[in-house]
Image (cartoon, rainbow over all chains, first blue to last red; front, side, top):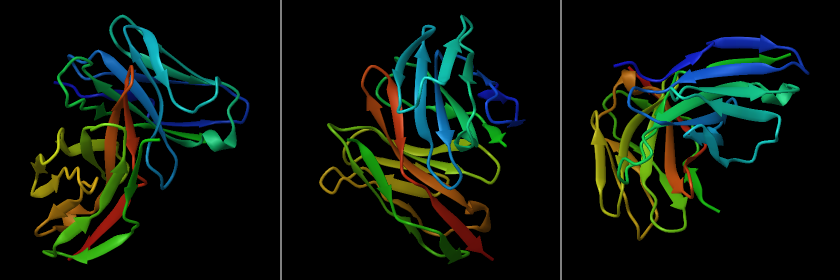
Length: 115
Length: 113
């Protein structure tokens, strides 16, 4: 059973460019969340997708956008990259209606460096 | 708002020592609580969880008890190993139209042989 997968593993971009990160959820999961983890800090919630719609957004600007496909996979897009966008981007998947445990399973992350 | 506070690190211990990493939370209602572990260069792995007051989560020798009266979820292990060296994150989940994890700042643990 494959876990959460993310691509690419590493990415280097220049300020002002745009980037797309990809995530495939764990088998059986229908919900995908994205988190940004700056160096030495805990992950920060960006947004969550369920049934191809954004359910909630954290405190991130509109430069951050996403999409969920019918097969539950997801993309995170960041436009007009800033140096401060350099971070590890984590995707997490879960099954929305599975009781009260609300476990989220994380992928290995995409390390984005903006120069 | 909802938040998680962890003891500041880094924490350095010798092998077979007793480990405690403190975690307290502020939340509306009674959230589920989690400990995640991050090994170097990797994503987060769920270590253990507790969904209601007085629940004890346990895994791989680690334990944490959901204490409503002190709003705490401290992580403990009786005898640590070098392989336990990692960053540990305490987290709670907020359910408001979505499942949003709120993390503490993380505690880096180093175990020396």
